Amino acid sequence: MIRVATYTTGRKVQETTLENLNTLRAIAWVDVVDPSVEELQMIREKLDIPFSELKHTMDQKESSRVRSEQNYTLIIFNGVKGEKTKAVLTPIGFIMTKRVLVTIRKESLGVIDQIDVNADVFTNIMRQGLDILLYTILYRIVKDAAMLLESVEEDIDEIETEALKVNNKKVTEKLFDVKKMLIYMRKSLVGNRMVVNYLRKEEQLIRNKGLFHDVEVELIQLIDQLEVYDEKLGTVIDICLTASANRANDVMKTFGIFAAMMLVPMLITGLYGMNVILPLQGHQNAFWIIMLIIIISVTIMLLMFKWKKWT
Figure 1: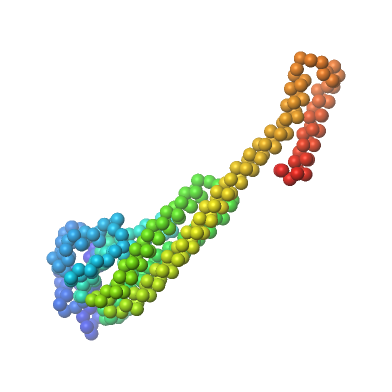
Figure 2: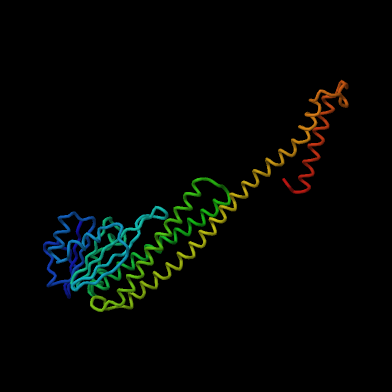
């Protein structure tokens, strides 16, 4: 899908098609989602952008980076798609010239798809220049990542509560899902910060460098916030391991107490199972007397364990 919006000085933004785009008369935003080979060829011919660069923007394994050429700047910026631990990173390609900003991505992304090109706010953005449009999109992507990190904090608190109560496979899986996501998020945020830092120094295309400084500050805050969450998650992992060890100790202590209480009965019954003469052997109530002795001895041991606070 290709969406094209153009702005001519003194007029409102208009939607058009790639075939009718005239970059000599207007500046334009070309938004492309999951394009076919034919559509990429059309973009290459219309905007004079190398096909290889267009293919780079479609690579889901691309890391955040920026490269300036003579007539365009290529930017790869990582966005976030999905919610909480199910969220995945998705690269977004930006190709910026003096007259056109192209955004290309393999999958739809809400923060970009929801931009209303017919709104007065968008017209005001285009009136200020393509660098302001680029800033607006990058800022929305960063804010989307911030909202994801806020939900991750809730997940960590939930895992911490569950870890203290139960020890099951679901808690462990959720714990390592969050850990894996934080690792990918750190890589993405650090790469995005390097891109924004580079754009702040770009002389040809970026005029309002102060706004991009604001985006960099937001990214720095997110990286710091992520570090806090990572440390908190490490603490939760320690809590899980400690709780698991304590539960194992409780089980072993229970078995130990049970085994200790069985020692006296086993000793007495073992002695009376021997083929020798023993006290009470000829008594008519010998069985009940021996059972009473066993019960009394087990009760005394149990009371002693309670007094020692071993149970």
